[in-house]
Length: 376
Image (cartoon, rainbow, N blue to C red; front, side, top):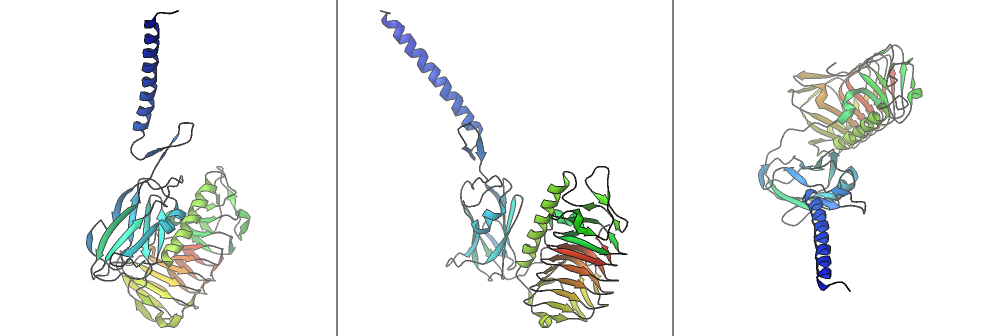
């Protein structure tokens, strides 16, 4: 029988080994940081997103009544989860404010559908239903308070994301009737390059894009080599997000001209129609280089033959947004300035022109027209 001291030494060695193993595990957990959560049994960890900053700032006062609420997170976020997780309500009685949540990477913006009340306290909340792009829930619910004043702030532009890189972007095809002049890059997705007609395509040696005589730029399609398919998917998603963003802004002017306007100068702002918009005679957009125009059109947009939309002052086409749920038609000899976001089709007819971008969720038809992306 072994001496009693042998058992004591064996037990002591076992305890020391156990403590060493526990210490190693504790060290791994601490290295993960306060916002890390244990993952699967294979030892992986998942980082929980947190809110790192907000606008308006916590307890901000005299906030413009047309201002949004926004939050920046520590990680890129899932757009779908934030649609219901990001809310805004009055502090006094908890009345919910309707609005649209736009998420881009690690930033989410809540745009109220109407102007906020003056001199009123609001509570913005982001619940733990918000998830990162990797589907990890927010670490803790985040709330903050701000109070409006009486002022109306400048209209903020619409973030086009990577769709900004295209002069024409369409989901179901681009039809060209020669001879057109297009300056800028073209893209289609998810439809393939076979849906680009009237333009003979010559594939670049990289196989990532093509060229064609009537386009000063490149032509992209999802059947081209990587990374083109992924880049196009992102651009189309950004185009759709921009459409929702533009549609969700609180309007400054509603039903101007009952849907028919012309021979008028429009100041910067958000204009909304519950019908189609027909521009029958030329109009002017007058403002500075930082001023923004957003036109929300529930149905189609039509420019009559020879009608011109022109910019004066230092107004820029990059700051003009035409959001139309119906078909957009720029008739013969008509001219349009700005970024066109349409949920359906768009046509620019013979001798028509656009100084801007045409981003369509269906198809685009160009008949002997001129389209020029600003800045090129």
